[in-house]
Length: 272
Image (cartoon, rainbow, N blue to C red; front, side):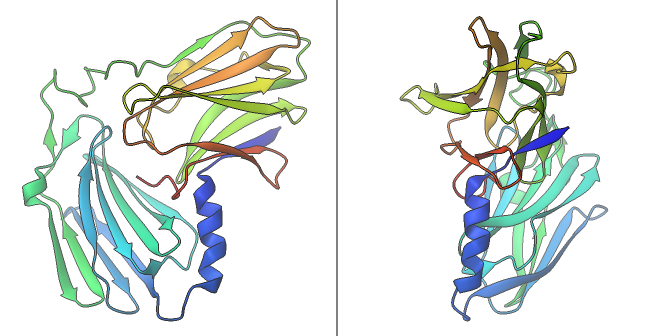
């Protein structure tokens, strides 16, 4: 079985740039999240000035550290409860990003999110107690956003050279799990407005595996509002992945990897 990694392309480029950054750039040294206090504390080796914002679908507090490099692999911490996870990565070549993502159906009052410097190089992000969204509000578990339904349509084609098993979420993106030959992939972008954009990824000479499950497709992750996986009636067969993008989503790209697969990447690392 081969893993075809789908991760933000900008992450690899940013990691390579870290080697040549000026010595004056700050570096993130440590971070930890206190689940009991809803508090994130992080330390850099020199002074920084964080920028924070609240982003929705899913709800997450995003803290950018301009002029700062990560100096270590992208990492995440699974929390549980009202806070789903905390993740850290290199957003741009000189910006480290920390993300506190809430669980489905929760939100916080942005006016009560506090970002405070303990020292010039140690900061604390204090969240208020997350609140449950009303049942019929956007983002609540019982009220999916229009256009975010996941679907898998079509039967397995025995003659296909490649079978597509699943799309799985990683701490910094996605990967496509396939079996068989390394496929040729084409990409088409549709829609000219932020609210109607789609990316179509066609996997040539491939078939949807019987193992593929629509309910396992990631949704509302990294600004992807929905996935549609379709077996196209062509010869040789083609599996199409249609990604419906949220308005804030970057322009996703597909590039070849050195692991024998294909990366799906977003400029800037996709950590949002």
